[in-house]
Image (cartoon, rainbow, N blue to C red; front, side, top):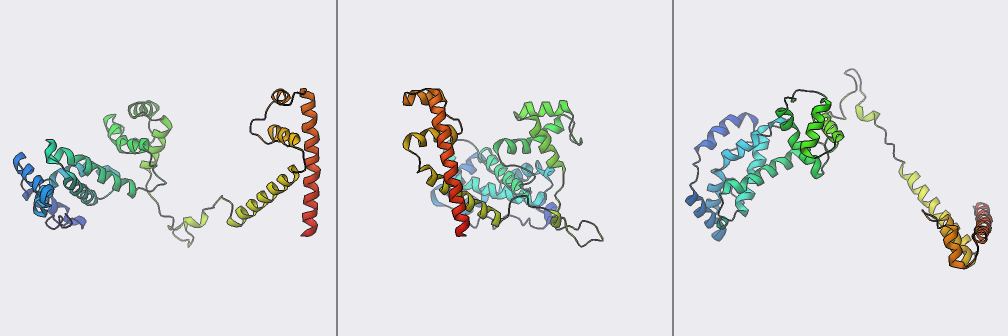
Length: 295
């Protein structure tokens, strides 16, 4: 199968597209019996010639499917080439014993290869990669055409609502995807003005903290945690437990619950908490001063 492209017409240059479409018409379509025989030869003996005949007999199907994806701004020749790869994968995995024709099975592989190529060709900034976003991406143009809104810029509210309902996505996702698909890609290396040496990327600002800040914050956080643990070790077991439950939990335990644990009043629990916290503050301040003096 590695040499199965040997007889496939060359499609790399864009100006060869018309000649390619003429050339693939020369390959005969296969009858069901012929297809079964060739598929069996490939499956049993890995007969490359048999695989080649199955691929070339379906090149017109690949071209037809690829033409349905012309609205994504990519060269048709590239879409067909990717579809041919999918066709080869389909032939490689086709099982003639299941009873259906190769074309029925191959359509999935052809579409999958073309869609994967389109997704990789569009920048990740412009389109997400979740299943819902892929579905929206590949069906938005078709539904807009059905609703006679293919040439609209921002979609009308009623159109957005209709599309969101058909594809089971949110209206916000429809609006955002429509705008992403409508906007062309721009190079970050393009000059800001024709008479300027500055590029657009020069104006980009990374709002994330720099590496030194991140490392410094991490070290400080680690130091503070160490001081806290040291200070906590100076409290008795009950004080530590109450303080952790009341001050160091996302959802603090109530005074009522802790009073039941220790068999004391809620007011007594509150007093222990306050006293333990005061001890903790004194201990941490002392440690901070000592560390500063050492530095």
